[in-house]
Amino acid sequence: MSEKKNPVVTEGEVTTFSQIWLTSLLEFLSGTRTFYFLVGIAALVVLIAAMFAVNAMYIGYRHTYGVTREIPWGILISGYIFFVLTSSGLCIVSSIGHVFGVKSFMPIAKRSVYLSVVTIVAGFMVIFFDLENPFRLLIWNTLSPNPTSNIWWMGTLYGAYLFFMTLEFLLLLLGRHRYARVFGLLVLIFGIAAYGNLGAVFGMLYGREFWYGPYMPIYFIASAAASGCTAIIFFTYLGYKITAEKMDRAMELSLQAVGKIWALFLTVLMFFITWKIITGFAGGEGKVLALKEWLIGKYALNFWLFEVGFGFLIPFFLLLISGFKNLNQMFAASVFAFIGFFFMRFDFLVVGQVVSHYFEFKVTDFPVILSYNPSIYEIMIIIGAVAFCIMAFLVGEKVFKGHKTEIH
Image (spheres, rainbow, N blue to C red):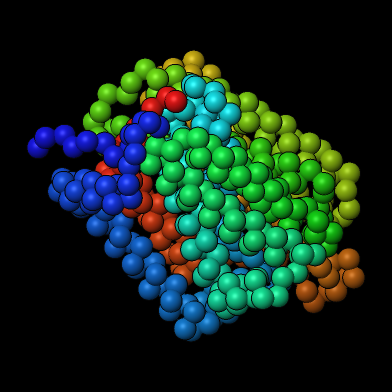
């Protein structure tokens, strides 16, 4: 089959939406059996997860989810945090190239922006099924705004973030890099405000000592950047393996630059975690109880093996051993980091709620340390969101022909 003309053209050329859609459709229809099989499996998992989610809405969340009145936020909220911070990090790292003009980061721009849209949509899908009546958010967020609420700001800022990011990606497809740069800057501004505000949702909860603190928005920004670097290396490596193309020198240099920034942010996160623990033991009794549960209690395996081992130490040393040049080792680091980061989001959310509000009142018939176990419904929704990202990634690689980017 002869190679089709890439719809993503240089800035001086004009590409219409109809040309993009037609070429994209032809690219999708030219896939191999393996491609359609993988997309079909991912779509089937999404469908099964959607059936679980709709059934949970019909039966009632209190009967199907593992959350309780004492622990109202479960794995769905931690999954939401995981996806939106990954999206935000992709936005941060990709903006270094096509917004601020650092040429070594330009080859990753289109794939990063596309994946940023995909992961934020996955995050919205997860939180949609966490809300008992999700349609109220869509209606009353506009009709009855509450500027004093961090939750209201979170919905508003992330909504604007998704809107501008979609426009940015479309402009990149059209080759209108000058206008895409403007929207890329808007995405960065709204994005930093959004995930800084997401950190404030937790950092301003005085009643939850484990979360409370002014550093939380900064921690979320650094954590998002680390997640974005992980996603760029992971998906870029897979993209070239799927298409069996040889990675050009520009992309190799770009991934090396991303790896160096990733190592920096991993160092920053290890610094944050260390001082969170040190200062936490100087805090109130509730915070100390939560820290003990995290470090030596029920969540100790999660912390030491998955967060510290998979999330920080193994990726960090693999990056150092690779010299930021061995892409196989860097990809392995990204696999470990993805697993570690998910556990990090889960532990952060749940450990902040396990200490009962009643412990300080010495209520003897109520446990001091609460427990939470996600139900099969919650787990299936998370699996469905992951499958959606895989499906969208595969389709994106095929339709947009590897997200090739010209240095402009």
